Length: 106
Length: 222
Image 1 (cartoon, each protein chain N blue to C red):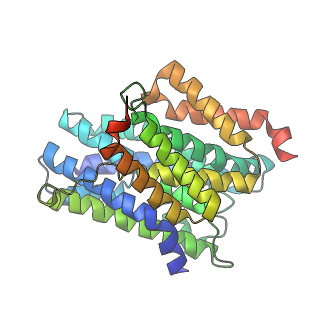
Image 2: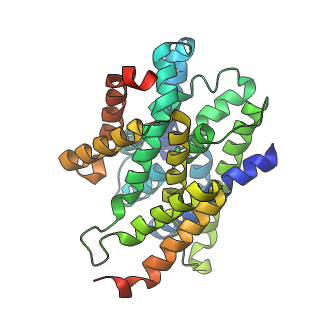
């Protein structure tokens, strides 16, 4: 088990430390600055889509509890811009719909 | 500063405890190792998806090398996180090694999408990272040690992460003042899923999105 943990730790650290070891002197480069500015935006969108990969789009609910949850999160966030409120209320909407909303699914 | 970090990490803390417990429970039920190995994984590896994957691989008798390679591939995306954090971590001094070590998807989201208190950027970054890891380790330990006895139904709690990334995506949109990177991400993801299937799509989608960003660079930097 020690070998497994050491191996996994090294493997994870290889990806996390590599850019700092390889490009630390290039942090002022315009390419790196460009990436620093625009990459997080695209990455967050990809992570949202990645989180939805377990959704059963062809099932009886066609994934609408998840879509309604995201709509609730964004709606609340546009209105109040309070991340904690948006995240917890949106999740509550999702949990309520996915546990008790099946009656509405055709 | 600490209270600011606690407030901004609260959703992650909740999600990490719940997901960490899920991992701990799986670890304890699938494998015959004592509970503290699950804690050790949370402390040293600190990579959610890789830890789940490792349980499956260990249960099917995979060797340490195979698990390390799978972990490496799964976490390659963190390379890009690092690239886009080079500037933000500059001058972090003694905090820097830990900040790099603890850069998970969720921590990356908070560090890029929330405002750090003026003049205390790196201690704020450090607090966020430490709080998140503590929650994750606590979850791993609780799940492995007492998961089967607690029997809390956490179905649906994982949606906190979907909600978190949605909020972060919106905050990013506000920062860059254009939806182009988000639309690009959507196209890259769909193309990647269409060609490779959802299971393999993450890294190729990130690569495609990055190429797309550079292709659109002129328009974006206007």
